[in-house]
Image (cartoon, rainbow, N blue to C red):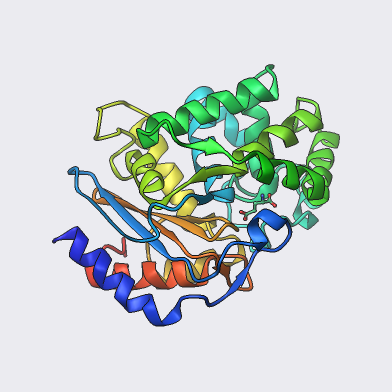
Length: 306
Ligand code: GLU
């Protein structure tokens, strides 16, 4: 299959839908993004690359960063992580607090905010937020094979100014003893991680290890063991789109993770990593046109895992 022809065809498929959805408006830096942007990039395990639209325009990856933070935490601490965070879909919005009380401060999964805060707590590992952020950034640059990946300081600062709900979640979890570091440190790290700025090409390249049993095919590096990669894909499939995870599995049939910046990362195991970006969101906070593009791509390729 010619990947560039595929990307061009999918770009044409969604051309009439550009601008649909509502751009996240809880911070100015996201609110001012033009909703008509659309980018798509594919990196395949056999070394092909293809990109279309605004695939070179950096955007705020937001919750897509949770996949990479989970990779780092699993690689570092392994199975004991599952004593602190579950792996069941929540059926709740990304920032919901309701389940936490009933479930004694153990978040449902690592891809909702509550679970991601616990993962970030693991990454702090007794160090400072600056050190943890530097680690995460170094990881992303290495995986993207691009030193241009950076943290958008304006986005991180705005997240901190408006992050009352995340602060509530972190304090609540800490009250149950499931966060070890000072809440301020966990939040500072989490907000910077969410504020990573990347384009579709970088993102597809960075996630390629998830399509290749944990090994980056570009340099042969073992990013995580094969079982870890399989499990991350399973969690992306069941939990990657918050309370719309079932719908994404139904329509696209690939492990995926969305972010409120309008990005969606999808993995076709054994084949490719795909990044789509369109800033307009649907009611569940997932990219409307991004999901549509991935639905078309999955249909054109037959890459659905089902
Ligand atoms: N920074 C956002 C938050 O934690 C990320 C949410 C998302 O991308 O879904 O509220």
